[in-house]
Length: 281
Length: 234
Image (cartoon, rainbow over all chains, first blue to last red; front, side, top):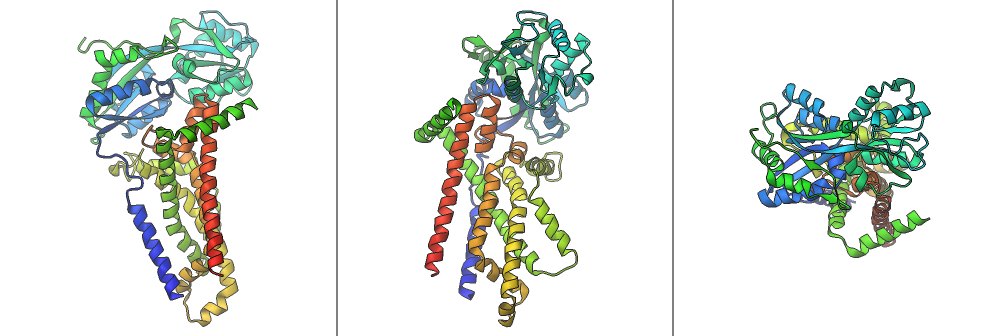
């Protein structure tokens, strides 16, 4: 028995050594920044197109954590990211005002679209007035899937309902269904229950499970969706990689980054329109 | 049926092509889960055995608590570790959030109660059976711990496999603390969640089949190693 016990102890020690070993050592020697961004930029494939160009030029790796805008801002607030890249201008301005971020810049825009079942039970397809379409959907009590996750898209949707003068409190749980999920899962849900849903165009164009869904309303200027980038305040969080974070922000908003954004297309269609103003203007 | 056919074909193509990105994800998944289960075993096996043998006030409460923790929701474990490792949290200075280490920590939190609770039950039963024999040999209770763990080793392999199953299948905790960063913290399960989000259901299910195959192979190796060990022991 003592021998087996000694063997067993040795095995344990060996296991401990294996743990301490380099099994899961990350590539820590390469410089990197952490960017808190939105599911729409990640899932539309834009980052896959954009980031390798930046890394090739600067040697800085960009690690993207893709969340809803609300959650991404929360990461920045807690100092868990170096750069925040989101799309909810009023929330971003509040973030700056509270001292959580600095140096916000417009980067690009795309637009939201109203997606719905091809059968179009509320008969809203083909219109350009999204607010009128929402009123018709509410009157028809046609199923509508909401992100319900405090994301930029969710907030844009809530603004549109408000403009349409619809009180959602009564509709909740009936035809208005909050999924509390990202854009893709919300589209999956809408496809499953033949519901209407507000989506950003990028995620929609890249979405493979479109099923019986189609765009029903687009082109309304109220569907404009501005993206902004900012640095997490280094005065508040001293570990923020300021120089590398600024390098990323500068690159995104300068000619090279802007051209890279404009050149990203899916099926020949551009997903984002670069609109950073020239620096200093 | 068409969806399942596509998924199977996708899985086969992924495996056959030996896709480099997929291999990285597989290696990371295995690395994180195996490391977590190893640490959880080092903590959980002696802990479970000690609780089985020790007699102290509040022991029943400890047993109930550890049994209950087997049902710890992964998202809650993830959130707990996130708040711990966040830059604004108590361990923020180490900058461990969104690294594989953070994922290992979260999985250790999830797996340790499973291993400790099941070990406690097995050793408890064994102790009842061999109490007289061990005490007559003059072994104190504490010294009986390694002996009992060794005697129960074949049952405990299944315990460790249960822990590994939990770790490999888990997505809620590592999504929160790892961030699903491509090439850094993207594992099999978070990749499956991502592809589902993108609506690429065939690829998601295909990845699921690859993961299942992997777990199957690990379990087969463990099983047949056990059979061989039993035969060698006579």
